[in-house]
Image 1 (cartoon, one colour):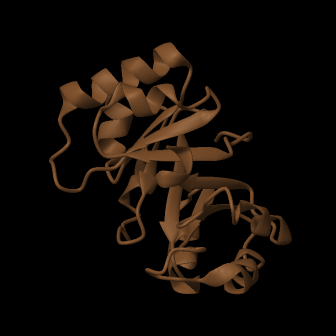
Image 2 (cartoon, rainbow, N blue to C red):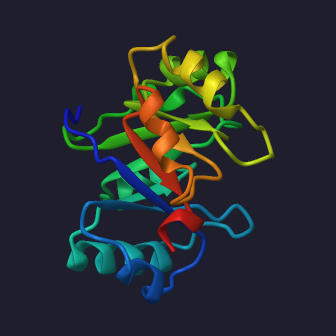
Length: 174
């Protein structure tokens, strides 16, 4: 599996080049739209655009499709508890990341074989952890921890109090 993971992850739910163009090449784009069924032509369009810009591109909640379309990786949301993807064959650079809100979900993500855990929500009021609980939970795993939820330019410095590896979000990158 991939050793050097990116540190910035930006979630999109539609293909809008204006938002992707604002990101540097080190930012990973994650397509996450649970309202629509995954349309291959749209995913390929996003993949090609990201590749042209130098961004890695991950698909949410569909590892099999991500593999078949030769994407850079997949994101497993907290509600997905399946481990059937463990039987798939992955290329060495394929990235698998997943999100969790508590210790139980973190354990599930470890069993799913993710390389990094998006721990949320650090600052956002929904599923609120706060900086102290975030720090305590992040100390309970050897996996890389990505901070997610409510991160802004005003509170991002508070993350330096923790052992976070990277940042993920929507509004922080817009």
